[in-house]
Length: 267
Image 1 (spheres, helix red, strand yellow):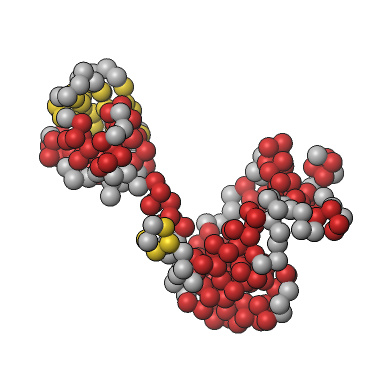
Image 2 (cartoon, helix red, strand yellow):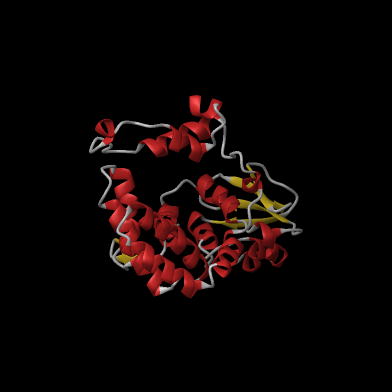
């Protein structure tokens, strides 16, 4: 709080708060002071610091392309990373991670950048007592070396991991209340594709008393427990599952519902 009152942003506060080495060395077995300071800052002040650039920064891909161009392109940046790793220092590995972040934003499959990043991440992970930080560093190294997997499924991007953990399948839907399954439709809307589209229908369940009024409008889907003036579609829980999984299109249910197929990111 004192750091905040002195005008520091989150990073500045993390650098301001100092703990003597004897209080930190081999004692940060869970988190680390810098991370917790930033969390306190975010809770007290919010995400925005003192740099107005952060209000509306460049898109990540645009920033990476522009930044790398200023360094002489990807090849020039790769050479800088190689030099940074050779320094065998904390600062050197930190700089390598920053540079490879930009390179992989532009060229996600750049093998040299991936291996250099893995080397830097592993080096930093081996030099922290924080289990949290070490876990992230070592996982990053394994990811870019192609050694990270979940249930035998190789993970090449963290997005892949999220998709595997959050993927909806027939078994999950079968064991989920129909109310949840219908409501799940709201989270599948592609707001860009849905812009300007409208459609609505009533869903009656043939194997229960549940009914729903489902409306696509203004880039969202609204689900209510009462019927509207639209088309009536009667399905079983199992048949609705096929719709949510994308195996049955809305157009197949009724030609007036084709806008749902356009607006949703199923599969």
